[in-house]
Figure 1 (spheres, helix red, strand yellow):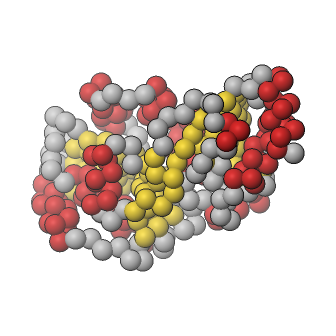
Figure 2: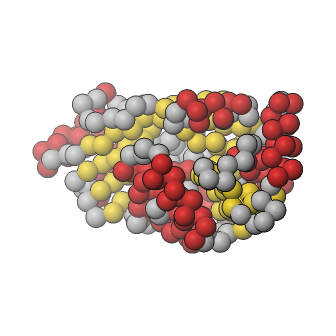
Figure 3: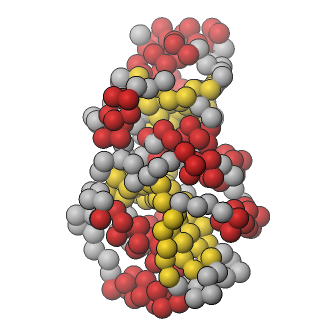
Length: 279
């Protein structure tokens, strides 16, 4: 577990969704740990290690030491690692395609006239409200998305646990875009816990009640909230696919951190070898 002092340290230095303990623990039902300045989450025989250090630049050797410490203490049967790069010692483990986190720098943000026109046009049809109530309308829109889009099992699991996350967070907000009749057209969820960052967590929109620019209007409101809370950046999340990447780059999002991951299943012998290699 982490102490109150460690919680403050994490909040002070967090810059990724995975640096938000109330998010990860609610989704995965894990407990958070801090090994040096590297966050980890553990449940039963599984370990999740977030190899993006808090408060200092990434160094692969330091991450390896943190991973070795975590494995030695918790003795997991399986390890999920996310990091800017995967150590060569784990090169044989299964890996999804690599990606990048995208970021908006609010101090130099320039919104093009074309994007401003999109936001203005959407604002004529829609109004945006902010709340913390994840209700049946939101659940139905998530289910609609899952039925109409191909997503992996991990993403499906996360989406189905959004209500648990929101119930555990005091710093996350839902931004709703609604018609004049009160119909939900789209919604964003953003997290404002980190000192310097707002985190753009989720975006969903209705195919049946599609309004052009609804997601742009919502992101514009997230930006205004981030500025009001004196955040320096917005982490827009991963690129995911060309369409999502285009949306983020259209707003000025820049790839600022590589994202790689792997799943490792150490045997008893493999555990010992890994610990000895990283001592």
